[in-house]
Structure formats: structure tokens, C-alpha cells
Length: 341
Image 1 (cartoon, helix red, strand yellow):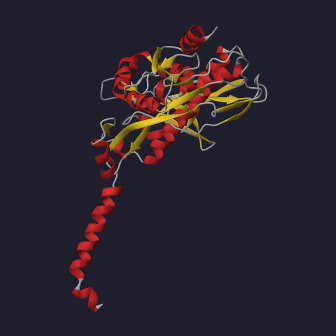
Image 2 (cartoon, helix red, strand yellow):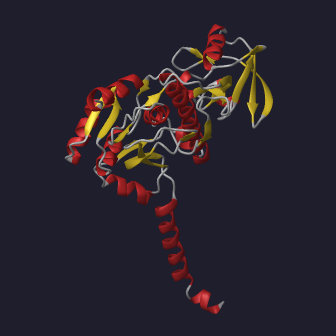
């Protein structure tokens, strides 16, 4: 005790230094960091009975994302000329990391379902499934949906109408007037929850509930056994929707006898919908950096990102071929026309 009294100033200084160091390495800042990523095999997403083998590979391209970085991580990114830094809005900074992670997981889950449907459709194979509600991925802040709906809720009924897919849900919601109360039933943690909700005026002058199509996906229930060929396993692990195109190409390649990889290492990015349309993504530069490092032969990108992708390739001084596409068919036809016999 006497020692503590005689050294209390030194102890306080050491405690302050320790606290500052800890904060420097752990305190979350309101930013997103996009860092160069890499590629990983898309063939691990789905296992199909009797799948055809490939001589090459399809690989999803990813960005190394740091959400709410520490000051140390932020400074490292500031000195990395291949990193992008985005400041969160005041509202976004209040969202717990666990919820942000769940949102990204749901985007991934939706992209896998859409990839399966698009691939089986393109290959003229039978995928046995039913539509069973609408999964809520996210909501617009400051709206009734944000206040009353949770990430992961599944809308199954609106005003006594059973909801099968997002088209039905948005058609009904669109016909409901502003400030007109209506009933919505959702599955929340596998339990039915009944909500009385209404659309309200938003800050831009429109009247909204707080949902839009990109924040939802149809809840698909797939019958693995009755699908032809049969699906034996699906891996939903991962984050975000941007591997949609490559996942679809990989599944399609398993379903058809023609090996559309032609021995090449193929990567790419782009969302996918059930009809095979390819959509925009984030972090194209970081994905190109990672793909170049991984010695990818061909990289598919949505048309909207083509110019930025080429600039990133020039920075890497790579001869990787970048191919812009709008649809799944564009990518398949490119491979068949340029590498097929």
C-alpha cells in the first residue's frame, strides 16, 4: 500500500498509456474499409449428384471488408493506395456489427437460391421448389418498416392474403394508401408475429413502408430429392450477393456435359437474379487487384464496372482478360464461342 502511494503518479500514467493503446487497436470508427481481396472456388457452394467435372475452375472474387475499423486499421488503409475508405452515416454507425453481418449473410443466402434457379433453368434441368414468403434483408432507416420489422423476418401474409414471393408482396403494398393501416404477418425466429403497420410520408416527399426489392428476396423451399439432378448439399456460408454470377456459372457447368471452363481459371463478380440478369456490385477495383494476384485468366464483370475494372488491371500491369456481361447467357456464350471447338 505504501508503494502504491509513493508511485501512484507512475501508475496513473501507465494506466493512461495502456488505455490509449487499447483504444488505438480496438475502438470502432464509423467507416467501411475495402481492401484488396482474392478469389475462392465457387464449386464448394453446391454439391450435385452426378455433377460433371471441369478441367478448369470458376472462382468468386471477394473484397476484404473491415466494418467499423480501429484507428490502427484505419491508418493502415490510409497509407494503402489500393484501399477505399467510406464514411458511415450517423444512422449506419449505430447499427451493431452483428446486425450488419446478418444482413450480409442473408444477401449471400438469397444469391445462392437465385444462382440455383438461374443455372437449372439455363441448363434445362428440373429444380423442384416452392415459394414461401419474402425474407427481409434490410429496411430503410426512419421508416415504419425499420421500426417494426427485423432483419431476417419472413413476410407470409398481408391483409389475409398469403404471400408467396416479393412480386406479390410489393403489388399489394403498392396498392395501399398512405397512412392506411394494414395487417402483416411475419415469421420471426420460426414464430408467427402479427403486426399492424402503415405507410408514412418520407423525407423526400414520397409515402413509403421502408422496403424495396433489393432489401428482400423470395423465400425458396427447395426439394433436394426431387430435383433432377439431385442436390445433395448447399453451403450458404459467406457474405454479400456479388458472387451470384460466378456461382451460377459453376452450377451450370456441373449440370451440362460440355466443360465450359476449357481448362481456364475463371473469376468474376456480379449479382444474379432468377432469370440470369447480372447486376452491379461494390469494390470492383479491389476485386480486380485480388484476381490479378491470383493469376486469373478471365474475369467477368457487369458492364457498368468495365472501365473501372480495366483501370485497376492497368495498375496491376496484368494481361488478365476482362469480359463485360449483362446476363448469364452472355458469359456462357462468350466461353463457348471463344474457346469451344
